[in-house]
Structures are given as structure tokens and as C-alpha cells.
Amino acid sequence: MIVETLLPMGKLDPGMREPETPLHIGQFAALAATAEEAGLDAVLVEETKDDPFQLLALAAPATSNVQLGTSVAMAFPRSPTITAMSAWSLQKLSEGRFVLGLGTQVRAHITRRFGLDWSAPAPWMRDYVNAMRSVWDCWQTGEQLNFESEHYNLNLMVPLFDPGPIDHPEIPIHIAAIGPNMCALAGEVGDGVRLHPVCTSAFIDAEVLPNLAKGAARTNRAVDDVEVCIKPLVGTAVDAATLASVTETVRARVAFYLSTPSYRRTFALHGWEGIARDASECSRAGRWEELPKLVDDEMLHTVATIGTYDEIGPMLAERYRPRVDRIEFSIPVRNPDDSAALKEILATLKG
Image (cartoon, rainbow, N blue to C red; front, side, top):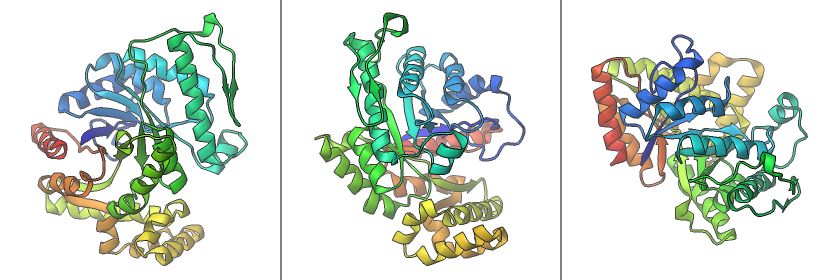
């Protein structure tokens, strides 16, 4: 498996799950270099508090081998031509190491945060990805831009705005998905699918992989060419005593996901749909302290992978290696012992 790390602002070193002190944006390049030195294969950035494309532009010249990617950038608020240019520039700057991860966002954010009209996300994302690729083809080959779809009609590209060909024009596109339509779309037009942490191994087997194959069949693609990527929910610590408190933090995170209707499909697969409805009622009523009590140990250890540093590598490998190509993982690296532990875990995950 390829092992990736997520580096949002506020994290001082690879894998810190919660920020200890605010991280200035100027430190991001050094942080990416640290991740590369630790042996991680890819550095990813979420779109939360800073522009992910700008952060990766800082990281590109500070690194040489590690892949750089968005996990994920919001597609719909940006024109596909704008996103195409951001990706094109990062691919040039990183000399072919960029991976474009795209997400749809939910209706409320699309309409109330970005001020756009809502549309069914899977057809919209299909048009978006194909529009971007048409722009890239225009720049790389010099052919006239001519793309028509329900959501985008692009037919103008003048020399002033044409950056021209690059050495590595094939930019991988990963699509965030959890439901059947988006998983199928990733198989149809994506180079990878990025799964939510609540996607259990059973859910991947029963829902993700069959729908991915269904989508690939629409365009006569080999489903094995579509990378399956996951950011699993992990609880780990150096020893059992420390892990005990970490476990309760993870239980609370599972409870939050349990209360979110968008993720109910996963819990329903395991027979927990009724508990998920109860969790949603607690959430709507503001009874947050009751949520973790709904997550028993069976649910906790099904959704999350929990173990000490010497246990977590084999546990994750057993659970995910048969199913995924890329996995996000990291631990805090504050001293030589932490560094050695991380490298041993990475070696196990990479196989």
C-alpha cells in the first residue's frame, strides 16, 4: 500500500490528530519535507482553513519524491477551467507529483456558503471532470477546446490564456465518495476513489468495490486501474495506558459519525440503523454527552482500528491491504523513538 499523511494547518509534525499550537502557513514547506524524510509516500491537504493549492505550491520546491495532493478540494465552487489551471501549475512545479482529489460538498454548503444552485452531484461531477480533461487536452495538444454538457459548455481558449504543454500531462483525479452513485462515478471517470473513515471493511466489500466495478464497466475500463484510497479512523498510542484515553476520544468521533445521516448507510449495513437514528435525535436535541454511550465496543472496533504502536501496523494491514491501494496514516514524531516507531509501522503497511 501507498502510505499518505494529511497535513492540515495547526499540526506540528506528521500525524498529529489535533493541533497543539497554531502553525504559521510559512512552516508548511518544512512540514512537508519532514513527512518526506520520515518515509511517507504522499502529503495531502484538506480544504478547510487555507487554500490547498497554495499550500502545495509551498511544499513542491521543498520536496523531491513525495507525492502532493488535495484530499479533497471542493470542485463545484470553482470553474473546471480554474481548477484545471491550478492543477496544471502544480503538476509543473512538482515535476509530475501532483494528485487532484475532488469533493462535491453537501447541499447546505453549496447553496449557503458558496451561493450556488444545487444539482445532483454525480452527473455534475462527471461533467466537471470531463470538462477539466478537455481543457488539459487543449493545452497539451493544441486542439480547439470544444466541450458540451449539461453543466458546462467550453469552446474558447485564446493563446494568452493557454499555458501550453507540460512534461507530465496525465494528472490523476481522485473522487471523494461513499454512496453508490459517487463510487460508480469514480470507477467511470476517476483515477481513484477517496473513501470516508466510516467505510468499514465489510462496507468496502459489499458497497464500494461492486459499485466501483459497475462504473468502470460503463466506460470499458479496468477497475484495477482505479486506486482505492482511505483515511481510516485510527486510535493508537505508545502504550496501553495512553491508548485507553485515546480510545474514548475515538469513541466520541464514531458517535459523531453515527449521528450524521449522510453516513447512515455504513451503519445500516452492520444492523445499527436504529442506533444511528437514536444518535441523530440526540444530536438534534443537543444531547452531545449521550452520543458516546451509543457506541459499544463492537461498533467501535468495527469502525475504528485501535492498538498500540507495535500493534497498529499489522492490524491496519490485515484490515485494509486486501481492499485498498492507499491509506492515510501517521503518528506524532517528537523524538527519535517516535521516528523509529513510525518507520516500523510504515514498513509494515507498505509490505
